[in-house]
Image (cartoon, rainbow, N blue to C red; front, side):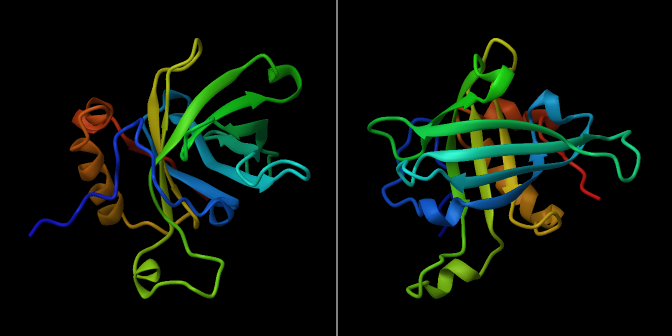
Length: 188
């Protein structure tokens, strides 16, 4: 019997999303987005915003140029993610500061996170923490995918390849990973 896919097509709703377990820092370890090709140490940190629903996230992306000298300060992009009405895994991102005019839509296609509650099931701890996100195209970027890991070296090449294989079986996004479309994002 084939193992069920951990990756769902864009537009799918996941019935039970552990929003609190998505909080914290994630390392972008693989991507199809051209903006990460010359970057390293790409991290995304999600936190709650006081007075907002648990599904509204403060979003800080930090990264460095691959040619950055050791000790250089990373660049950052800040925004707010608001869960779309009627959706369980689709957010609209809006930039902060001078990026306030920029928006994008993204969603979770699959994940494995460690529960923060005592009711953790044994199956949830058998594989590393990961997230696959899908970004719709904007005026400035093509549509694309990222694979996040809780740890910068928490996903083996074989594990990432297994996720890419599953993504490749999802018709709506298979073209994004076809012929090596997904590349590794390095971390120091």
